[in-house]
Length: 147
Image (tube, rainbow, N blue to C red; front, top):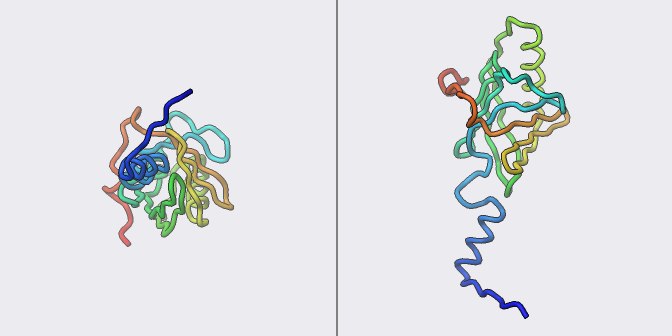
C-alpha cells in the first residue's frame, strides 16, 4: 500500500501555479530565435529574433523591428497590438521572410510554449521559435517602433 502525501493549502496552490506556468509571469518570457516558418526550417543564420518580457514582445525579422503584447492564458495565449517598421530588405529572400513573419504576427495569432519551443499560429501561418540562449541576440529595443 502506498502512502499519501498531504500538502498544505499554500503548497497545493503553489504546485498548481507552477504546473500551469502561471507563476512568475508569462511562461513565454525570454529570448527566442526562429526555428521554422510553416514547417520549413529557418537557416542557422536567420536574423528573426524576439525578446519577451513582462508581456511585451520586441523583435526583428532582419529588416524590420516589431513589437506586440502577449495576453497569457496558462502556457498559451494571444498576441495583440502588432506594430512593425516598414523598411524594405535588400535581399529578395529576406523580404519574403519578413513579409511572412509580419503576416503571421499581424493576423491575431495565438501562441503556445512547450518546453524550449514557442509556437505562434494564425490564419496566415505558423512560426516556431526556440530559446535563443545559444546565439548572441541583438537588443531589439534599440530601434523598435514607437507607439
